[in-house]
Amino acid sequence: MTHLWLRAEQRANETRTGLTPEGAAQLIAAGMKVSVEESDSRVLPTAAYAQAGCEIVPAHSWPDAPRDAVIFGLKELPEDGTPLTHRHIMFGHAYKGQASGQTLLKRFKAGGGTLLDLEYLTDDTGRRVAAFGYWAGFAGAAVAVKCRIAQLRGEICSPVQPYPNADALKAALAEELAQVAATGDRALVIGALGRVGRGAADLCAAMEIDVTGWDMAETAHGGPFPETLDHAYFFNCILANADTPAFVRPDAPEADRALRVIGDIACDPDSAFNPVQVYDRATTWEAPALRVHDDPPLDVMAIDNLPSMLPRESSEDFAGQLLPTLRALPQDDDPVWRRAQDLFIRHVAEV
Image 1 (cartoon, rainbow, N blue to C red):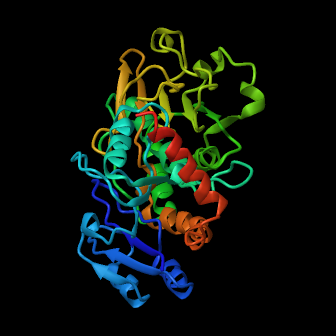
Image 2 (cartoon, rainbow, N blue to C red):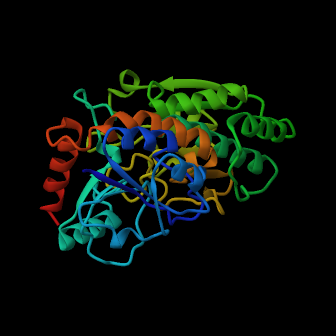
């Protein structure tokens, strides 16, 4: 019997989950065992999982889970250096040269465990089977607008908090925007046809910010892209790889520019493939904006768990997308899981 173990997230401001109680009930009905760690911060109550038939276990007890349990979470594990012996489903951020990712792979190698990276669960066409992208784009654009509002007030963006739903976020943001003179601001969205880009564009449209949408056709020539400097907002909404050109070059802060806020929603600053070359670290809920130039101001917003600003909507959306793939977990020949395992084997052999 396949045993799925839903761990409690241990990162601050992370209340999302990749499995709803309704989804867990479907997995149990399909013959799987589901254990759920207690969590006071998870957006969906632990009691609902118990009512769905899940075994409830203490928070953060996954290191002592049975060896054959598959540990499922979203964000990073505690960086305590311990060997990892289980199969883990999570966002590992380990395959693009990230220093922390290399450390994670070494832990898997030491313990004999396996990383099944959520970012690389793909169908036969290479498309991800589940992604938080839309809500990352939506929330990321909202925080970028908050950064712009702060600039117009002569300030830098203050801490951000989650919202109960998208309507509440839009209402609060529109009220703030109405108090400043932001008329004429435009946004350039790279990856406009993808989930992330659509989310960013929808938020901008709701705030009556004109959007220029670019995708593969517009960026195929490889740059340079002076148009990024002609918009108040630049949103990076693509999954970068070795072939991705630089969209914002190191000299951008000193250039003559309309650009005021970079929303790096893809947020991979320590990757060798980072196409936004004016910053080197993620921002946080407590300090959403990294100011990289003062006059005129240029802020980078690069929070790496943006969908947590709308935890219920983003969790239910993602979990619904992922559920068919979780149901296939017991199948040894399932191509989605096989590809993820093969990718791990290839990368772990290099550390």
